[in-house]
Length: 146
Length: 420
Image 1: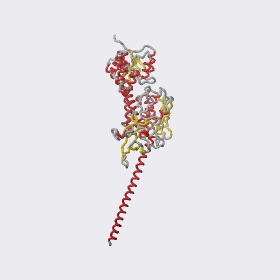
Image 2 (image 1 turned 90 degrees about the horizontal axis):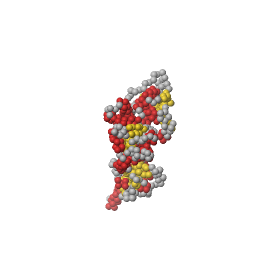
Image 3 (image 1 turned 30 degrees about the horizontal axis):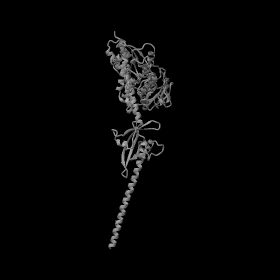
Image 4 (image 1 turned 135 degrees about the horizontal axis):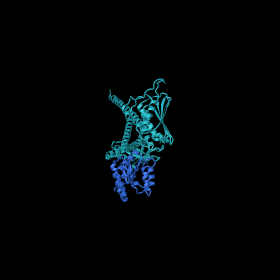
């Protein structure tokens, strides 16, 4: 029996939410969606946790950086895998993302198959591997931004 | 003639000749003195007016003289910098390090052609208020009367150039962000449709609709960027003639409602409002202001009004949205300016919409102003010069002239295609 992972998609753009939901559900994920960082934090505060969160960065009120930071600060969600999915692709943005504790960083526009592969890759790593990957990604960034 | 007389005559002639020579030399010298004086006056006058700071030091780096711009640059509150070591008087820094003048002028070592194109070296100095003042500096050697060495430093304040450069960099980052979101949707849905031919028809319809909407948005962004670049390079020309602004306002309100589904409260009387304008440029202005009002009004009403005020036809667009503070209101027509620049921005945009609007209004010899308060909304008011020969009340309304469609205007009727 194949495992159906549960993903929470967080994006303020309805069509990007729809696209991500569509692609992930076609790839076998069970998808729920949130339209803002605040909405996502509310959903995650109650109820069951998903297996992975796909998180946009530029959002009103509570942006993706803050959402990730709050998730990492809460023992309940500190280890919840989070993949950032953003138009912000500068090395300093990536440094911020990896330093805040993301597990994957997808730069929009990205190909849909690549997104599914990225999520599946993250889900197969254990905590130590995810931490090692963060350190590796930061070390790979240009020296000037580190 | 006796030999004595001959001798006397010879000496007299020689003396006269010497006097002539001396007088000629003296005359020449006077001319040279006058020329030299004039030249000095001219040089001093040029140096006094030139915007670049000129600082002359001796070989040991002690300031010998400066022009007024140089004095201002050194900011010594009326105290002369003459006699002060150059390093202390100017306090130039390269990166985080102070320029070390002790073993000769480092600018000199770099030479006036330090930069690839010979413009000088970028340095900076700390202003009393803690800000950094960027300067383009160069130096060269001249020899004084006694064969000694003097160093002439030229210092140009490039603060405004730097600011413009930074604004452009920020704009490129913002514009590329704005382009990435529609491209993600278009490419993503197209890829998904190709990848999953078994997709449910209603899902496929949603995908195609999203592709279409985002493609229009992308096209509108690109059109705005092109128009902005045309305005920048002075290639936008408007064709001014009589325009029935009342009809134009009504038409744009209806078109905007149809395209956006948002109600626009229209306030126009029955009087003819004929102004001197370019109809397509004015449409762009009205469409953008409506777009802007809806974007920042948080669902509240948007009012479009047209009226005659003195020698102008006035169009105003009001919302009761988030509004702007005083600083924001002052900057809102600047190129690349955006009310929000952080990651929690609620509104997209490239920051060139209001710049385009104000540029088009300027080109039509009109004026634009803004009244706003934080949390209370914003009113943009455009005044277009009234046409001197207004048609009388019993004449039929002039038709909005759309005949003069020019290539550039064809590109810019983009604002009603959805918020950008």
